[in-house]
Length: 252
Image (cartoon, rainbow, N blue to C red):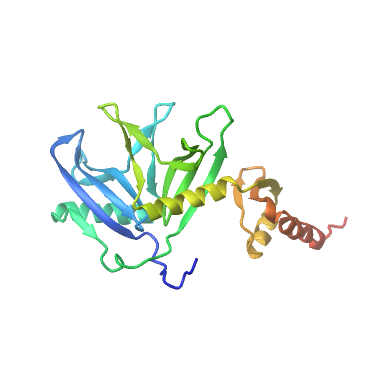
């Protein structure tokens, strides 16, 4: 792909925001917002709610888990981005600005920041092949699945909920056909990537970062477990073995 015509947009870009005030508040919800991130995904049904203590707050779309708690289906990656989103939606509602479009870059092509993480493959008996988290810029979408279409192709399945009319409605959708193709390709590439696991010391982790090797870290009180691409196995072992050889010997 020729990337000369693409620009890299600042992270956390809200390409479009549409707020729909409700004629009658429902359980404290006074408006619903659809937010498009980096012209790539649109997150639907973000609720603006009135607090019983006064003021407004934003609630991301959530689902009920088996243990009776609610977890966000899609949300900002960190507290700073969440606060930026909250401030934007509340300010728009309070000033009566119910539509926002980022015109500065709307007519330009760009390279969005897309990653697929925490990919878990299902057993052959399952309808779906895998589930994973989708990261676009500084927003994350949980429980994105991969399945076969009727003609045998692989396609992503975005999180949805069953409405009161018995229809499934998508919580998150790709903004365009090109965005869908981008997300689908990224997911399939991750699904087809083989990984290896290894315990590592804090020093190993530091050296792997310095070497620029990509890995995911699961850290516990007793040990570190790294997940890395099988294709990078020789690089990983070279760094770890070199660290072991160069470690100072303890005498006495």
